[in-house]
Length: 104
Image (cartoon, rainbow, N blue to C red; front, top):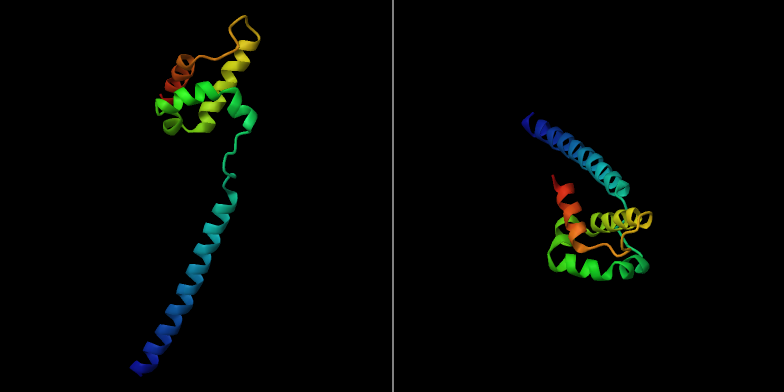
């Protein structure tokens, strides 16, 4: 009797384990599939803000906040400056100020 019970328990356990593993794998695969593709900024964008990005990188801010966030702020500040009479080059100081506001 105990041999039969242990065989049945073993088969049930392995079926349950494989079903659970399959469900977990399926959920993980769907999560991975729903992730956005890695951020790949255009070479135009990188060259446009090369000087600022270089300085921000030296300060460790591109690592701290992420390149997408830094570029978004640069683009936003540039767009805001187009309509006004401000200089078209966004200063690193303004970007740092915006990044610190974002952090709060």
